[in-house]
Length: 237
Image (cartoon, rainbow, N blue to C red; front, side, top):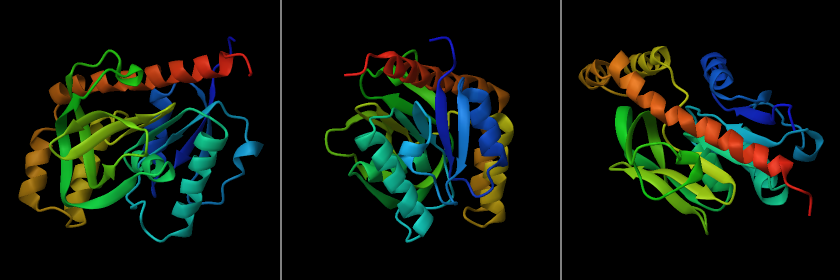
């Protein structure tokens, strides 16, 4: 096959312009961009080879109809249709929930460029150092991975990545550029989610040097696309 794979990009962000821009830049695929807050077409009616679920300021355990619909859509895509999937931050938590895991509020907030440690060999993290830098921003966490899943990354805030079959979730944001990291940090201060002193400490770490180090984590997008290409090229059983 010479044509590029086609992915559903499920945009869960409430103000999704920068989210769309970041994922368009990082995913070497044709994207069917779907607003997760709107009714989604049935999985069987979309021509896709895999899916990616973005971050959001929502919590996956909130009682919002669009969240329940998204979780079920992802479950059908992964469990019933065997499509490769990648979830980032809220998307990571959505995948975990859809596949039988559990997400809870952390009681704290992780934000900024943080070290993440690989906890085993995994092809989507291939090429990353055993400890690598990534931008994080979340107050919810996967506290129990789905049955049969493997934890692939973590740090002192908990689970940073898991895999089940051809579904991967990562808590950190490999898609962020430097502008997004700075804007997100400032927004947390403006919304009084964190103190000015806490955000100043985060902004001190939003530097070109840290961004360059964090770009290592972007390799996981190419690795995931490789899985998608292999899956769609495999003979039908």
